Image: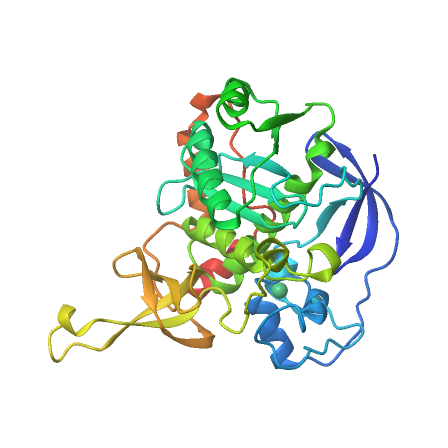
Length: 377
Ligand SMILES: [Zn+2]
């Protein structure tokens, strides 16, 4: 099995997989480091798209509903300039093996479960669960506190998604973990869903969702570095990355996964750089006359409607759903975070990790530049 490392769609190295490590065989093509002039508009798009490779922006015009003119990306323009991208080591591992084709949405769905991460989210979650529809490449991300929560998450998702789309889930690909084996009979007898298993020896069978999780975690890492927000917000970053990914032209025939799945082109003009300053309007009823009309927060996510956003309030340490907030897209929140620095959090969490479920603790942080975090607050 040959693995490839890519940057902005170009293969830059071959790799061999040993366990969970990828060993570089050879550098296939030198990454182009052309000294191109920066375009602030293009850099802003790059940040709005959660630090995805700029090449993906080229195909957006015509596959989204609200972009009037194509975004022009000059040849050689890449994200090598971008500090968060460099620090997040945004190399993506691509498995070129294609699974059997199914054309109908929900015909085959890949699932993957990652974690526990050493730092819990603000809601206490430590696991990421992703589902990817093979036909349309649309994906869904869920965060859970326990691995065993998967069953509930899946059944709720199945019910809602089948109702909204009018399609039925036919095949679900799972990994061979014991708790999913127990689930298999129920899925088949109660819901008529067939299960396929990824064997422990060939994890590349589940390459679709493994690749997705790598991408989402890598984007989330770049977004957190860019925004200089505390690490406990990684869950919000991962969910936002999934939302953005469904709006990029990576689906069948260059469509967005969102359109391939729902037959409706999504809009993208409401996207903002993750973590930028946002002003939440306080309802009149909730404030005294002389109090400020707005509270200063930052963007951490999107909702089902393009009018409402998820904002993080550093004062109350809560996520609020805010209708039509005002954004300062080039500003970051300057806040003395009372939480420990990521290095301390990582050290501390080693001793308190919930290894009682028998799974090792996974680190979200690799090669992190902690100086930047300390320097900015
Ligand atoms: Zn970047």
